[in-house]
Each structure stands twice: as structure tokens, then as C-alpha cells.
Length: 233
Image (spheres, rainbow, N blue to C red):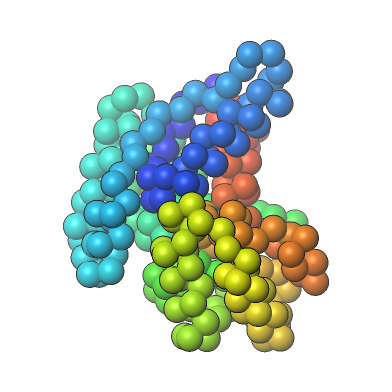
């Protein structure tokens, strides 16, 4: 089994899910007392969020590389960035460490391709929805087009992430707002909805919007990373 290095704490609520689900997956597949071989570097998310708001991307990139190098020094065989937004730095992290980053976009796109889906709606932070790195990766690497909500809807989606989900709060009115945004994405041609923030699965599950395939990026990322660790990819 390979040792995975987790860049976590962005936020700790979703990182907790990564840790739990990875261990559960390994236990289910290998049986007995088996669990995942994991190393973790967990950031103080208040510092990360403040840098994001200030658009201080150079400082954030340096922090991510520093965390990744610490994981490499500790013995990680590959890296898992436990957040969609900070995959902005995946290429720089790979270049700086020489370690493979198990990209969340590959994990989600693999399922979209399996379902013959070529365009999907994306929900996430403002940075994931507005900055080109995320949609560009899906298009260039997998030929998949992402459809983002309107600017006003993007603000609603992102505010709920930072003000509620990253604080562990799950509220029904917010779920209703998300479902309205998802319906709008469907009307624009989305064949599926990507929960492109690792906290959104706390709020939205497939049964909440049965009209479309709902893909939880966190769960798919966990499955992808565990498959890599168990030499199944």
C-alpha cells in the first residue's frame, strides 16, 4: 500500500471526511484491521481564507508547496489536495516536490466519462467557479465543458460554503437555494452537477435533486486516491 500525503484543513470539516472515508474504504477492500496509510498537513483555514479573499495567490502557492514538501519529507508517495480550489497549485506542487498530485478533476471526470456526460454544472467557491484553472483542466484533459451559475448565484453558493458549511452548519434554507441554482444549471444544458467544493456534500445529496446525476467531488476523490494507494489504477 502506498502512503498518501493529505494537504488538509481547508476546511477541517471536509478533511475529516477524507480521513474517515479513506480508512473505511481500505478496511472494506482489504478486510480485517486494515486501514489507510496516511500523512496529513492541516492548515489554519482562517489564514488560507484571508489570503484567498485578498487574492494573494503567490503567498498561497508558497504555503501549499511548503506543506507538500513537509509531507514528502515525512514519506508520502503521492499527494491529495483536500479541496477543489487549491488545485490551482497542483502543477506547481508536482514540480516542486516530484510527487504525483492525485487530481480531484481526474477523479470526477472519470465518472463523467463513464456516464458519457460531456457538460456538467459546477458548484464551488467563487474561485473555483470563476477562475479559469478548473474549467480549463476538465476541457483540456477530458473534453468536458463546465457550466457555472450566474454571478449572483455564484455569490450565494460561495457565501454558504464559507459562512455555513466550513463552520459545520447545514441549514434547510441554504439547501433550497442550492437546489434552485442546480435547476437553473439544468435549464442551461447541464447533464450532471459537480459538487465542486469538498464541503457541499454535507448539504446536497443525490436524493435532493434526482433529475440529474449528482457527483460529490469528495467521495470520488477518496475513491480515486484509495485506488491509487492500493495499486488499482
